Image 1 (tube, rainbow, N blue to C red):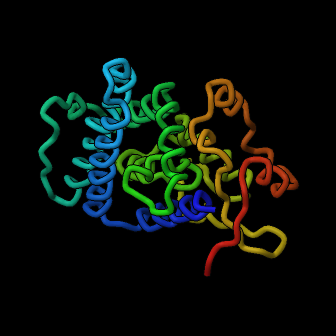
Image 2: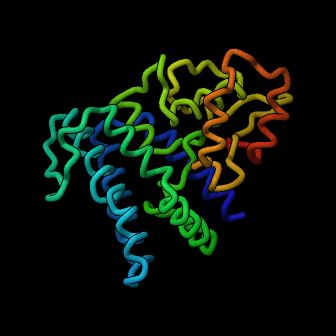
Amino acid sequence: MAENQQTIDMTRMACDAYHMSDAKMATTISLMSAASLKHLRATYEDEEDRSQLDAILPLFENIMPEISARLFARDGITLRRPRLSTLEGFTGMDLREAFIEAFQSEAFRKYLNILFEDRLLRSDLRHSDLITSPVVNGNIVAIALDRLEPPLSDEPDRLARIVKITGSILGLECEDGIWRPEFTAHHHEGATLTLVSDQVSDMVEGDDDLDAMDDFDLDEQDEDCGDMVETSGRQFEMAT
């Protein structure tokens, strides 16, 4: 049951992060990137793993630190960027796309499986675990990107589309494609439940699944959302 509790704890942390100041959220993401970088290097320390390491490094070395720097800047704090950073000149949309590309890459998917298996061996939750939280459950980096550069409502990117589809399934208004804490609880047959993704792979759907999402009609509300939700995740009663 450790996985269930860890996932619920991560979702609660995402809810807390949603209400954080820019500087506090930036600090959290800085801690996440530093812890994740340490774990990544320890995981791929052999020379034969170099290509896998190099494919994932930009997420923790450049993308997440750049997000932190921009959040700090909103609170009037100047953060020194990584020496080799090439993202300072990126637009907000460019930064979103860079994160999505890294987040949904084949190399990162493989690393997620390692993170997931490592997490199952213990009961505690670490900063390096937080990147594994599915977008629909609340991913702190995705929340930060929504704050820095909200997705285009008429041309939602893949993160926003996943959120909009989930909102449609849960019967929540989400035309902007931005995750909010209301996504973690909904009423089903009189009980308050929290939706928890069934597999870590739910966060990084394959291209075929994402292409199918492109064709999903957000205007068509399923009459029985409960059945759809049960096929996509486990439901747990929220602790009160």
